[in-house]
Length: 195
Image: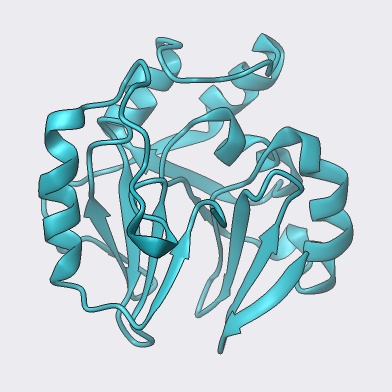
């Protein structure tokens, strides 16, 4: 359920194979928040690696229900997603599964856009990379110091790609995003799911 990926990086994997990553850098960072059904397990297992009250930043690769479900564990964090993703989420165009509107509204109030006008935006040494395809606002997070790519649902192991048949998918953009990721020459791939 929880494993150390590399120095300063831990991964919690939920029952549905959705991953939450914890990075213990100059700031304590979470990448994606897993499925709501894994809330208790995330608290139990990921809580062994970090005090959730110390998490300062949560970065969402995209805002589907299986990546936002445990956001409320991180009460002191600032939450970030791409502006396109936030726009689609607020309009309820994204896939939110059976999450209740009250839960979604709480997240609405906390989301702040990551401004991706410049591709060289960094947060605590992490580079944010726009990768539309799975959703129009999808992004990946590059950790250059350790050559780790957090790919959300853009790219999985075994050279599998994210679905592009969902309401906010942009299938014609996915190939460009994959080609862009080749330049990052990652040593470790940390996808949104362990498929």
